[in-house]
Amino acid sequence: MASWLVGVRRSASPAGCASTARLRWSGDPPTGLRPRARGGRPRGPDAVRAFLSDRSGLPGPRGNLELAEAWADAGPEAMVRVLADDADEFLRFCGVVGLGRLLAEASCASRSGGAAPEPPRGAAGTEPEGSPHPAAVARELTAMLRGRATDASWRVREAVAMALQRVGDSAPAVLRSLATEWAADPHPLVQRAAVAGICEPRLLGDETTAAAALDACATATDRLARRPTSERRGADVRVLRQGLGYCWSVAVAAAPIPGLPRFLGLTDAYPGDSDVAWIARENAKKKRLSALLVAT
Image 1: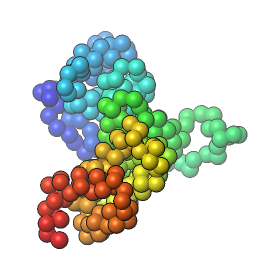
Image 2: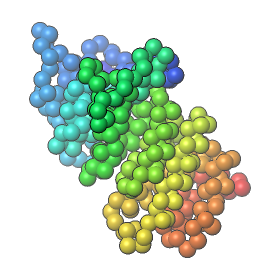
Image 3: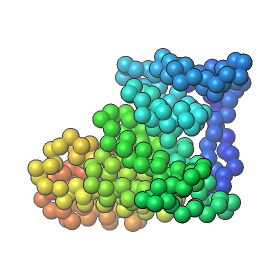
């Protein structure tokens, strides 16, 4: 990671939200992350694209995740939105991770005690004129993230999970609600985003979020088991199965008392289902879960 990024600090947050992480700089941020060029002129989109692309690490075995996360914290909202729809995979990755920050901020603003009530929506569900209310912004950003959850790029789909985790850092109730809704979504890649987003160890110290992670895993597994055999070999369903092959272990390790019985009951709940049996076997291999299974 570049030497200028030396850690994080916690900033004050609206009521009802946890503190949100912000970057702490050692000196000035690098040129490509400054919102304005020398002389005060706004930095143009082309300069930002060039800076990120030149340092993306792609093509190669690993993209520059540290740069993507740093830019997602520092990037202006308008540019985050633009990059989230960019044709370039790494730029789209950066933008989608940044959407998580924007969604967390909008969600916290709409839930804070100082936020004005949301005005009535206009005809046919349109928003009233003027600046959009944070709740309306949050709905829009949620829809954008859901769309990217089905992106053809696995990197961009992973960016959606990272974005959800940013929401969980500062607005855990919003993440729980999204995970519950998305785990029951008809699209297997949206279901995968739900479990991958919430099954993150740093988020599961909260008992309510840990319980929601177990529920999301159970819901997505049930939806998989209910799919006709003819759909099971589809690429998107296989991605979901792969995600469930590790997410259960994360959720159970965070909440073993309620989680172990639910996990151990999977194969009995879906007898003869080869995909559920595979999910159970794969999770049982994970060290975080295997130690608990030995102890039972």
